[in-house]
Length: 514
Ligand SMILES: C[S@@+](CC[C@H](N)C(=O)[O-])C[C@H]1O[C@@H](n2cnc3c(N)ncnc32)[C@H](O)[C@@H]1O
Image 1 (cartoon, rainbow, N blue to C red):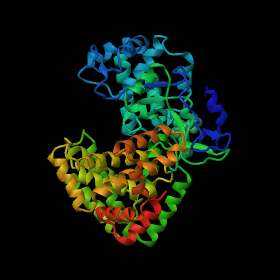
Image 2: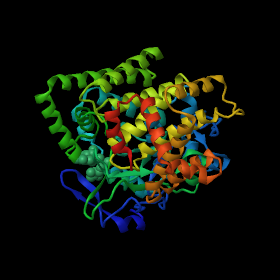
Image 3: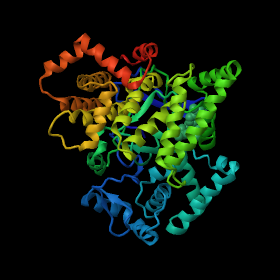
């Protein structure tokens, strides 16, 4: 049962060709808190599997389960952990994958009468695509069956068929919970949220308040509240369906369709898919060379991003990944038909940003890529200014800018490498004044739309960033933002840093100015 606040805004009814879906009962805006964390754990079932926060307490018995504190551990012990602890301990140092631990916990809770009957029945009633998985056969089915068999053998909590059903249900309906910075925390299987259908141009996002970044999230969980809000990304009219995106919507239409068909057994017919299909057909007819070049960029990018992110594959040397991805980005940027929304441009820039920041500790190069994402790609790729990925990207830029900006002061303690990197950024265009200008401008521009949305807590992130800029002299900051000469110089500095030609720069500016 959806909570009262939810029922004021939406209802569940048949969505032609999709089964059931969630529809707006009235016009909605980004400020409407459609579904707040007012529901109890009785309604939803969550599994917190991946949160690797160093502060978390690890169970000394199994060395697998993690808890936010002693009270949390005591509660978890009674609610489920006493039954799974010995199973995990026996297997250690092998750790069962997250999805297996999730279904084992669910079945153990049911077996020991620790789960409300309603939750169990609601879970079993969800669309599972059990039959479709069976019909599809192949390696996927083989893996599911082996996993179900293992879960049954290790836990003795249910038979193989029940586990197979639970696994298919989890695959079709579970939502990966993320912190506000998009780090995965665990899985949520919520019968209400599970009725939300997919669109590649989703109009809502599942927002998690910022304190999910620290133990605040876990404290909230202790009170059995699921702190999740449905955040409208734009205005939604009465009768319109609310949709989320099950997959990475920026990928090429052919890859999106293949993934949705393989994992969710449907063909997406959203407006973005219809338009992308016709653009793709037109391109293949009118410019087959460019169409095949795009396919080549995608294939190379997919291969190298996979190698750098999949720890099971033999990792390739970092320099090889970065040089290949840089080649792809350069080739794309130089092409006369270039548009920042063409896949794999954003994915390549994102990967380079992360590799430069985390692996090479090269803030200067990470900054250039982060800025390209924030200023060039984001405004064209995400139709909503409050799209959470845009917010995370902006915060990323601000963190690097702050780090480099501090090296202008004598008393920073970041070390000579960061100081050198800041000088490099300066040499390539961004003066000290422009550093500060952009720090302020990004905070101010990101704050505006967020203040008028459900995600005011994210506006707080930018307010905090702004406050950290100092000096506390607000007038100086105001002056920087309003002075035409400082603005013109800062924009020109940015253009040079990003290496964008004047003509294209005008186009970039037209999109980003909110
Ligand atoms: C999590 S469920 C969504 C709720 C589901 N429609 C129901 O009736 O309970 C996911 C399944 O819904 C269907 N579905 C979701 N989005 C769809 C779409 N855009 N077009 C067609 N079917 C869709 C697919 O069968 C998918 O595997």
